[in-house]
View 1 (cartoon, rainbow, N blue to C red):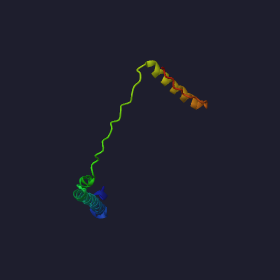
View 2 (cartoon, rainbow, N blue to C red):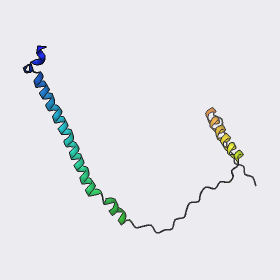
View 3 (tube, rainbow, N blue to C red):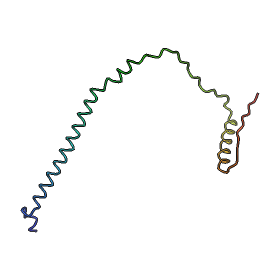
View 4 (cartoon, rainbow, N blue to C red):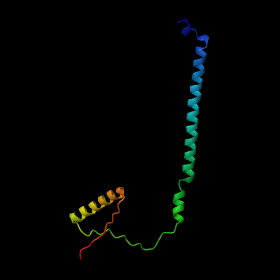
Length: 109
């Protein structure tokens, strides 16, 4: 128990040195964070208006654009949907077995 009370044996020096290292480390981290924050602030001030300047130089497009038509749904027949799903499943199964499968489209007139 005598070694805990004796500060001159080196324990106190080690604690002081450890405290100094921790303090220097914390100050270094916050100093680097401050420098990064300052750099980002300067970049924001310098480069903030660049996209606005860049878009003002672009000439607006005056051509008329045609609207894209929505896909046409030919039928709401559930039997057709079931047939398409069955054909997709059969094709997926045939690919794993090495057999060739071809989906052919039939339309009613």
